[in-house]
Image (tube, rainbow, N blue to C red; front, side):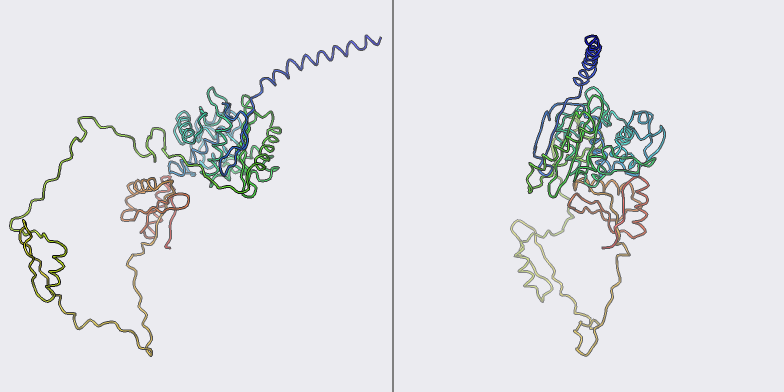
Length: 474
């Protein structure tokens, strides 16, 4: 009886083992590969790496590049945060996670940015791509161009959201590099990645990794990502005192285990990073603008002249015709000085004819005496009250100005000023174009306006989606 009672148990164990072999083992074998990277954000020095250069699916870490390009476009005046973006059918049809946008709907660009950064909304990311470049395919080309400029040598983007697509691959090292550039290149937008909630226009959205932000001391971003092919990915940044660490994980098995691993890597980074180290900011890439521009600044293209039209010889300009009998003054400075001294009280001083030149004369006219009606200013007597003199302003109240943005180079700021002046001649005619160097860029200003003109110019520019604010008298 005992042997019979054990047989069902034995068969039950065999059945469980078979199920485990058929289900658990294949799932484990199909799990996404693991990769990790830890750097000291201040210097960019690597503190830990594992499979850091293996090309893997980045999932929604892709949106870091999408947002980087949006920030670049806004800064350089391609688009405004207040621009109303029309949602296409393609963007509205993206699978979750999404904001729930409808085809034909219009929404401000700033809300799309918040939805992509905080909620990791796929429809918002696609809408951003189409707003900047007109199509997601063109935007992907710009993503790859920017990745190359940032030194992301093993990354290829195919879309703006990160959903699995053949050839859409990156590495832990490249994504860590991108996270560092986001922090240093666009610090004014970095706070987006630490917001627990955000107003995305149509609804409030919640951060995809609130647990790590709330539980790990000093954590303030950056981006999560998940697909079946990628696993649970995360680029995280944390600051404690003077130290800032960025850690990246690819291929986490779950949100919980991924967060635990990232916390472990951040701890390792803070342990290995020196307390004091010189900050070496990464160099920002040159700005080329929309796809198709091949010159820094995004203004113009290379023009190749046909051979027949090329200038082959620079001709010397002909001398200007001179009326006859007109004397030409040819004299050394010392000769003129001597002549002036010799003519203190005479009417005419003659210069000797230089060798090989015509005669030349200089008339030194004695100035008229000062009219007696003009009195000399004298210091007031001690017993006399000082006279207060007021001077009327000759500026006509043109003490105001406007700012049309801050740009990474003087060349770009001057180009924007010229372009804006040509597009808004009716209000900016006669104003002074001025580039002011700041610690983080160059301000493009128009000065010498009245308050009314400055206000009108700003309102007209803002209606054209150009960033503008007034500058009052200093």
